[in-house]
Structures are given as structure tokens and as C-alpha cells.
Image 1 (cartoon, rainbow, N blue to C red):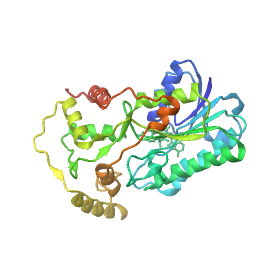
Image 2 (image 1 turned 120 degrees about the vertical axis):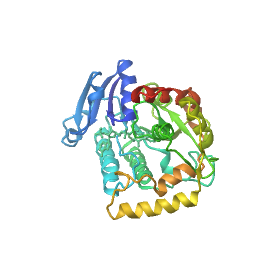
Image 3 (image 1 turned 90 degrees about the horizontal axis):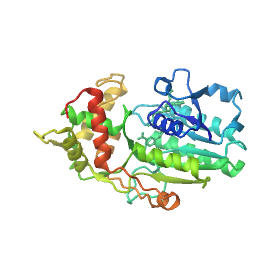
Image 4 (image 1 turned 135 degrees about the horizontal axis):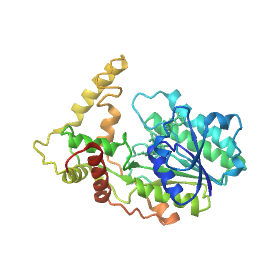
Length: 332
Ligand SMILES: NC(=O)c1ccc[n+]([C@@H]2O[C@H](COP(=O)([O-])OP(=O)(O)OC[C@H]3O[C@@H](n4cnc5c(N)ncnc54)[C@H](OP(=O)(O)O)[C@@H]3O)[C@@H](O)[C@H]2O)c1
């Protein structure tokens, strides 16, 4: 197939391109002038800039499908303008160029569009009510994708992954958690009984590839995650076992205290003092990630595409820990 990919220089994009290239697909990537394409050099890829699309220098008829992965990831302090530029503006440029030409527009959204629902598990029937600007941006992009389908018949699939983790992700939540546990700088906030639900990169790539190359567009949106969540305490235990780290003093930070510190640190950042680097070490949103109970129902994607993630938390964490150990020369 002839495939157009955005976000190819990112964590998910790299793994997707690797898979598609291995299967012999012809790949074209849309990048930015300062995108780092070093990791992609090993593949035979054609590159274009976003400007080439705006100035109609790319013939979209040549592509069968488009994976739109590019986006700013959720990051504290990112302005709405920046989210709009990477989200709505870029998405609309792609949508406009795809009308009548691309046979399947696959948009990578996020479970962030649902926010933190009181009713669990969150499914596709749950009201989409984002709690942060990132989720709001993803929801606006989803609305654009569906609008272009209704108005111009552009066929699409929207995927809403939960936390994706795996090798080559420097910024990811799981990578950071493992590094903190390794450095003995991790402390559980709250009682650690809340759950999160993730997906290992290979499982996510399996479904991305399958939907794009084996299925017709359903013009629908799907949550993508493991089938089951994991309690934070159990996740931490799993990582400690893999790292062979003994717990010396398991201090649990009360949520109220974490929120109190987060308020102070955020205020300091708002007046321009970067106390703990470009991002505050703790912020209300980060406390939410650590204490909120989140569970997703993946029966819709399973029913439609027979989606059965093959990596357990144990297997995924084992792979990532050993990869990080090799990269950072840790002894495990
Ligand atoms: N990883 C997760 O846990 C997760 C979970 C849910 C959803 N998602 C979604 O999955 C997709 C891929 O995520 P990822 O983890 O691979 O993210 P990533 O590693 O941060 O990569 C982001 C990609 O988007 C590009 N990009 C960033 N800002 C852009 C902008 N303003 N204009 C154009 N391109 C821009 C980057 O290009 P440069 O190289 O030029 O910076 C890079 O290729 C994203 O849409 C993300 O929202 C990810």
C-alpha cells in the first residue's frame, strides 16, 4: 500500500513506520523543518513538509491511507494556541487535502477526550468531557474528522489509545515511573489502590496496522487499551521486582499534601521561576494521574476487529525495564 504518515518522528510513529516498512509498504512522512529524522534513516521513506501540503505540492491521489499521529502530547503549561496549531490547524489541512482522494483517514486521538468519568468503565458511550486542553484539542480534532465525513464523505477511523508504553519513549509516563523507581525518587500519592489502564506499543501497532491495511473504514471511534487495568500499587511492585529493587521505606504521600505542594509550585511557575526544570515536578494534573481511578471497556474494538492485546503488564514491563537498563547501563 502507499501510506502517508504524520508524526513519524515520534514514539508511536517510529514503531508504526518500522512495522509498515517491514511489511513492504511504501511510506511518505509529513514532517517539520526541525524534525529529527535520524532514527527513520534506516527506512526507505519519502519526506514532505507541512508547507508542501498547504502549497499543494503533494498529490494525495497517490496515497491509499493516511495515519494522522502528529500532535503535541499532553504537557504542563502548553498554551491553547500551541495545541490548536498542532491539532485543529494541522488536522484540517490534512482533511481538506484528503477529500475524495484518501480512502481511509485514521486519526489518533486519545482517551483524554473522556476526561475522568465518575462512571466506570469508560466506554465509547461515555460522554466526551475532556478535563485538560490536550483532551479538548483531541475532541475538536475528532469533531473535524466527523464533520469532513458528514460533509464530504471522507472515510475515517478514530482510535483513542490510553497510556501507550514501550521502547523509545523518552517522555512517557511508564518510562518516567521506571526511572523514578530506579533512582529511589518515587513515592506513591494517596493509597495507591486506584487503577490505570495502559497498552504496550506492540499491541497498539498491531491494531493500527490491522485497521489500516486489512479493514474498510467504519467511520467510528474506538478506545484502545489492554483489557484490564492495574492497581498502581501492583504496577509499582511489578517494576520493583523487574528492577530487583528492595523497598527500604515505602512512604505514601497524602493526596491533600501533594495537592498543596502542587498549588504552590504551579504558582511559582506562573510567575516565571522554573524551579524544577521546564516542567514542575508536581502539578494538579500530575496528582490526578497518580490518584484517579480509571478503567476502560475495550469490548467495542474487540467486537469490530477481534482485538486481543497479547502483551500482559508483566511482559510489557519486563521488556521496557530491560531496554532501559541496557540504554542506561543499569544492573538488573
Ligand atoms: N504515547 C501515548 O501514551 C499516547 C496516548 C494517547 C494518545 N497518543 C497520541 O498518539 C499520537 C502519537 O503520540 P506519540 O506518543 O508518538 O507522541 P510523540 O512521541 O510526542 O510524537 C509526536 C509527533 O508529533 C509531531 N508533532 C508535535 N508537535 C507538532 C506540531 N505542532 N505540528 C506538527 N507535528 C507535530 C512530532 O514531530 P517533531 O519530530 O517535529 O517534533 C512527532 O512526530 C499523538 O497524536 C498522541 O496524542 C499518545
